[in-house]
Picture 1 (cartoon, rainbow, N blue to C red):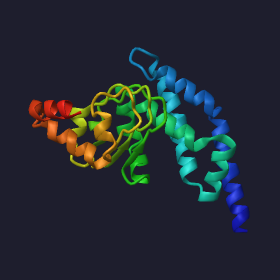
Picture 2 (picture 1 turned 60 degrees about the vertical axis):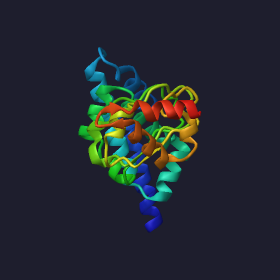
Picture 3 (picture 1 turned 180 degrees about the vertical axis):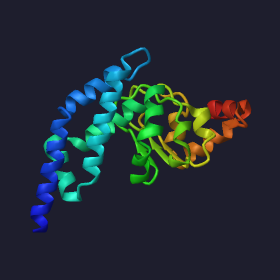
Picture 4 (picture 1 turned 45 degrees about the vertical axis):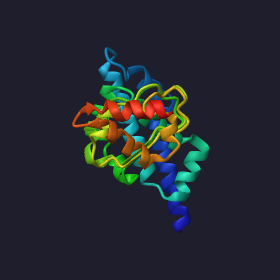
Length: 206
């Protein structure tokens, strides 16, 4: 009976996802409407679908999630949507207001690694819920909001290795470890200003 219950739960989740439209359509609509000046209605609809898919997925057991990941790629879809959200101010605002529970589910980790990210916007709205950020292996990533990340006391780790185009923090620092990255950022951003002595020393030493 427990096995049957899990199967029924999985079928219910899969059916609810289909009723919200195909996963690819939700992701496409989100990507097309995430930027400023685009249709806010489409953005709201895509985010609503994402929220329902996420809730259904998180209500599944481990075995159910494994099947949904294999058959429909749900886990990877949710991760890519998170990456899309943090790449725009509109997305971060929606994340903070409606999706912050996802950080509770991951114990404060926001994993947007290997998502073809080009930029991460100001994440200060996520507040003390954000404890660890993984943007590693985004080869096109060129910009991080380093000053605001440094000013977030709850953020203890930043994983950014494998981001070849990222200037700050430099990859020499990234290779030292995620906690060392945050120590570096806080050493060069003191009271909202840049500590040029530390920054020049680091660049010269590299």
